[in-house]
Length: 580
Image 1 (cartoon, one colour):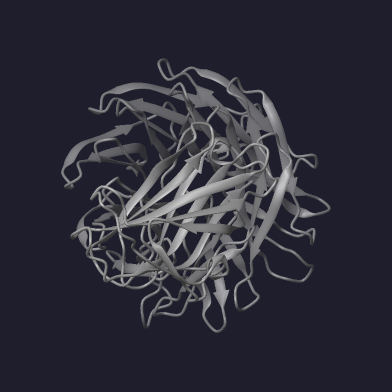
Image 2 (cartoon, one colour):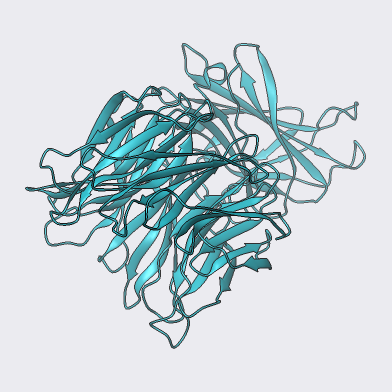
């Protein structure tokens, strides 16, 4: 059975239909100090709200930063903004959102929890990389007194346990990434310095139980016996930790390689590793790691080249460690292009973001590249801020509708660096071509009124029914899907009713079972709002195989008596979205 994704959310101020890979919205924030502000991390909640956090300067200061965290609705409305300051220089670096919408932000000045409305609940002094377990507990990893350190807190901020680990050697140790499995066991990765010199260091990986009991530690050392450290950790389909970072770093060259390694979840023994050394044997660096549904690992970073500065670097390894492909991307100017973030969608397509220079003499833009699962480049999308100056994304995410979110630092006109969060749509719009109404009466308009979000309405009123279970207004629409193979099919309804207590339901027609399937039930609003549903996978059952026809039904029913019809349904924009 194909997986079905639901995205059920009212958007108070609706946006127009997203065309192929077009910007849907961009939101900027300039701190009161009008200095170098940037998004350091981004997270989505289950409702599709976007949360970003980063350092921003308060009024009257260009030396001391605060934590600033902003929550945006899916249509880009700012829902809240919260600041946190403890020391003179507060720098957040991580964010996570639990299933209730609570937000956790961590960094140089500790960890702070906000509720879904942005009110601070508590703050605790340990700060670093964070992960949430299935019960809403938070694990923080970093360092303490030159040792690797881990802390676990309950949702109400109670310390459950704190652990340190001193790896063999005389140097300091630290943890920079953490992952938690389904049992609550904690895996963390970072650096073990063999001596008091980062030029002689190894990947460090440790595992603790959910109760804080030490289980094992593992190491990876590059062949050059130089500097190696882990930057990211993820778990594969079997719960084995996969770690990516930098290896063979020679502080005197300088030069380094990208390394990825997997460790056995039970023993901590290394299962495999792969080291990438670019063709010019210069500086290659890993920035981020993602896992796809097949257990493949994808590392993103950059590779330095003598002729082209640096290029994006993306490497995909199979579950057994075999390198499936490696791709580089030059922004166009043979300048310094650096990838900072990577993610995958439900079809295992790969998205890599960072900063890339398009033309010689210019500053970098936000630049996200999309690769097919087998490696071909699908598209490139950029964002150039209003100052036409430095723009560099640090994070990329995909929402349930396949939209791409980028966030990082972007120069404004007279504002230097700002937060910039950008949402880009991928869907190919398929408009309604035929409509039918019944039960109910079409009072005015035709399918032309449904083609765009323009306050031109199709207006219908209820008809007479003699069974209270039958909606007195039913509107059936049809359209034709684009020819591309669909990885995500969405359907949106924008409009309102002239009365409250009206229930709207959205159905999509399943051509395999020859029936309408209910996807969404919601109360209508008195002003335009949007309801949107989505189906993952190939969506083949909702697209007729030969004709590519699609069918949907929108019904309306009052909560009052059957014959109480002093209301109208006014539809502004109805359309499908097909994400190739």
